[in-house]
Image (cartoon, rainbow over all chains, first blue to last red):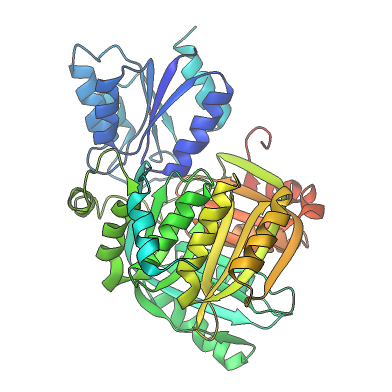
Length: 126
Length: 352
C-alpha cells in the first residue's frame, strides 16, 4: 500500500484532479472538502502527508495548519499548503508571509503544475 | 408506469447515496439565448462578457445541429452585464433572448463520479417536490442544478432525502455552515493576472454518444427515473447539460454516454418516452479542462471558445461549472483539439 495523502480543498474538481494524479503515482488518497472535515479526517486516520488549500469554508488552511503544528500528535505530519494566493493574485489579504508563519512544510502557489506537486510530495518520502 | 405513491415508496426504501458535499451560489443572474441553426451566440456572448470583465458562474451550450435551436445559457454574479448584450441582440433580431432571471441559485453536489444514480436521484428529488428546474450542468466532479431563489432552501433540504454527507447530518447543519462562508472568495475573484491561462489538467473521454432530447417540465421526474434505470445497466454519464427551451415549456437535455450503451439508451428512451424525439450524434469526445478558480474568473470560457473557433472546431456542447470547463467535440476533432488548446492555455504534462 502506498503512502496515505489527504487532500483538503473546497474545490471538488481540484480534489478529484489531484487525487487521480496521486493515485496514478501509487499513493493512497483521502479527500476532505473543508477545514473542519479535513481536521476530522486527520483525527480519524493519520495521513502521511496533507495537501491543504488555504481559502476554505468553516476553517481555512492557515488555521488548520497552525492547529496541526501546535498539536504534539500531529505536528510531524508534513503539510503542503496549496493556494490560489500567489503571483497571479496580487491583491489579497492572504499572503505568503501568513502561509510561512503557519510552519507549513512547503507552500506552493496555484496554479501549480502537476509534476511540481508530485515532486514536492515525493520529497517527503525519499 | 409506476404511480406517484410507488415512486415515493421506492425513494424512501432506496439507501441514501454517500457524497462529499454541497456547493451553492445564490443571487446569480441567468440568461438563456436561443438561435436558429446557422447562427451561434456562444463566442459572441462569451467575448462580450469577458471584455466587460464579468465572471461567468455557469455557461452551458448545446449546438444547433440537427436543425434545432442552438441554446446558450450564462450565469453571472448580477444582471447588469447582460443589459447591453440583450439590447444589441434584439436590435439585430437573429436570436431569441429568453427571460432574464435575476435571482437564481446554483446548487452542486459532489463528487458524482459520472454516476447516473446521483444525477437521476438529484433530478427526481428536486422535480418530485414540484420545484421548477432552470437547468443542469456537469463538471468532472460535480453536478449542478439551477433553481429560483425561492426554491433554494427546499432544494437543499430535498438533497438530504437521497444523499448523505459526512460532515452534515441534516439540512440545518449545512445551512448553518453555508451562511458562515458567503464572502470567502470575493476578494480574489477578478484579481488573477496571467500571461497565459494555466490549467491543472486536461482529461478526455472518447467513444461517446451525444444524445439530445427536449422534455416538458412535467416529464423531468420520469427522465430522472430513466437515468436510474441506465445506472442499473452500469452505464456512466461524463457529460450532461440542460437548459430552458426557447418557448419555456421545458428543458433541452444533452448528455454523453459510451457508444457501447447505444442500444440500451435507445431502448429505454423508446419504451419510457415514446412521444419524445431524440437526436443522436457520435462518436464524440469530451475534454475537461480544470484550473484555478475557473468558475470565478472572467475570460476563461471566452478563451476556450475563441481558440476552438479559430481552429474551426465546433463545440457540440459545452459546460462550464464549478471550476472546470467541459467541451464535447466530434471524435474527428479530438486530435486537433489539444493543439488548439495549447495555443491559448498552458497545459502541463500530457493529456490523460
